Length: 615
Image (tube, rainbow, N blue to C red; front, side):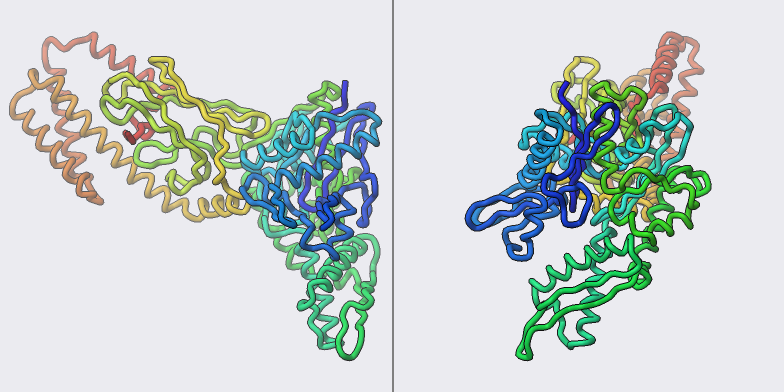
């Protein structure tokens, strides 16, 4: 059987691996890299004579050809953004496909066989559009992407191979080039289950480079009174030197930045020569390391764990090689909890290869249970957001709820899907919508519409609505372009936490209004069905109380509790009168009891799950 390779398609660097004899093997970049290791820089460049360069070759010429060099295309995946280079346009999928093509070619040369299938990793917060775009990039590169999995999950898989089945609480600390992701997982009996995720979208190795760049520029300015920020070429050289120094200071106590002829003015050429100690570097990045505290605490809080209950810390990403970062984690969780043995730059690719082995049947003792990072649901009566699949639910998953209509003779319902943590649908992110038409004429609350959310192993959402009476159904696969970026998702989650109390009050108001609206409907139905059995004065009392409540609702009166209670009490009088009748219909009473029993099994008829008639 052909090998299924695992690919970590990264923002700064990409890596690939495969299983050989049940063991993961990293596929090296054919030309090697200037920063060491076996990864491929996620760079693509075009020269003016039409040549295309990928990987280390593209990275090397970035200083001399900045307008023709593209990097960090991953940040634009799933968007309509276009890279314009020398008169040609490229989508993020195109650029990612060039990187994947190179990895495919290198893999075939290294393995000595044709490669057609791959597992590709994505950040945990990638939405459906971004995941689909990643699959599309694989297809363009000639790869059948058999699975998309989350990066922290892949990292955990890398450490799960050949391990015992002992129950463990694991933190995946993924500090990459641009972002920090903290994921807490359960591992036991060969099963990985994600419990919570958190992060900081503005914290990564690039930020460490930037503080080092500022330090180098400021030290040079002290000596020469020249600010190198005015020279783009000098800045690119300093950026490369800062990254190299950062990497070197992970293994040595001191390094030297030596950039001859960095600048030239009327007094002649200037050289930049500066020695930087590890202690100076650690002092510079200390504020950045402190920012790691909050994402860790948020993830612990969501999982219900304390630092003492965590068994292992898995490190992912080049910046986790920095001793100060490791010392911070050791102080937080304990020195013996840092997992060793897998290169942080390679473990995501290794995990993807293991997932490929699971799919191919080469690995049989591991099961992957991922989660959805945000709550998914639909808009219901009054604009409320009704969850179908809660945040941090293990995927793949299928969940259904039964809803009903909000108006008599309603011929259709508008299914509006959104994601987020707010109580009001409008405060969350709209993912898509569709109509289920052809509902037979019936009183409100009678039709039963089953809405099913299905998230597949790649985290892609399918929504189906089915009229249980007619069997008619409609389906949508979420591919809307206006989805949240990772940064926006984190902002929404934090906003939901901040606005929780206010949202709760708003939700209570809407639910109370829905109850009042339903009470009006019940009173109208009571009059229609029982007028011939009711005393005239009681009929007038019901009508008057109903009209008073309708008036309060139409005037958007803030407090209509008095009118609500008045109508409720008079309807109770109607019920009391009915039971005082000597010929009360026992069969009808039994029928009503059956309906209540049915409602208690999960039907959302006649409650906040009713739809507005949007037709």
